[in-house]
Length: 335
Image (cartoon, rainbow, N blue to C red; front, top):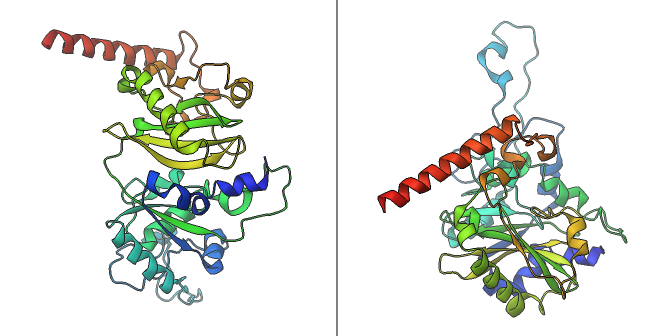
């Protein structure tokens, strides 16, 4: 993989060409002071000092040492510390607020390549929906995945020269609360041939995908041929799409072939061996509750889970399948 291939996958680079096919997005080039703020772990976790009156979030992330039992009492000989100087980015905050209003009042943020999906748990909304700079900063400062953008974007490049991109961009993407995770898919392109498609959310079994598997594969394949194949300049890459309820395909993102990109229902060894001209295109989905890949939802690496016959996980999956079959049988009887 070359640096130029990695750079093509930066959202600010591919968005202009594919704007009509993807989610409406506003961009803000981030000042170096904000990048330093994101990477600074030398002091307490502080959120930016807001220049508006709309941000109700506290500037300092709660710490157990701030409880009453840890406070210095009057008369203590301990030296009183001066108040902390809060980081402030007034111009950036104003510009971001204007973009959020333009995009309908809520957005989900990402950097050049990555979104802070691993930090959704800390958000007040429990997802990536943001309405102000402080909420964006909270997600970014809490995300391990953004370290890839900040420090490791070119680690897999055979011609690595850069340690980081020349500029970092904040992409504000319009938030759609009704999007269904089961309708997002990752597509793998090798030598300009679509060689595989995978369900994006592999930690859940969605019965609708079993029923519509062939239809979805056809829609995505047609979308690739009509809109992506001759337009994206790399030969080997991945891209993510979303299929709407009207059965229209929308582009979500581009990612590199291999590197930090997850192969999901495939392995990279499998994908390397597929011959796009000879082998039939396959859409891989979670076919049953026993086939889920637990991933982040269990906080346990998939390889560490014992799903062999008779194991605890095996019993859990069997019980889930029985309940699902009983539910379907009941629905058939009612119908």
